[in-house]
Length: 87
Image 1 (spheres, rainbow, N blue to C red):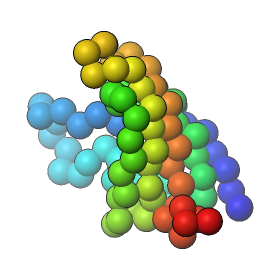
Image 2: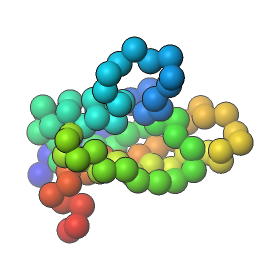
Image 3: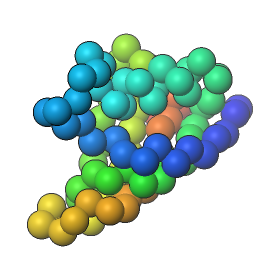
């Protein structure tokens, strides 16, 4: 099992973005390229708590951040390979 840590700077998608892919999908593809099973993510900048499965990237993201009405300056999360999430 391979663990990693990544300061992603943000997982928020913006309407101004010129990327065709979602940020979480890009992060998931990079983690898969390096064969990381579980990654700790910081500076996610996502509000509240939640999870999202990026099927094409093969990872499920879990995060915790500040309340919706506060500035999104921080936040932490994990990306876990989908084959390990049920375990």
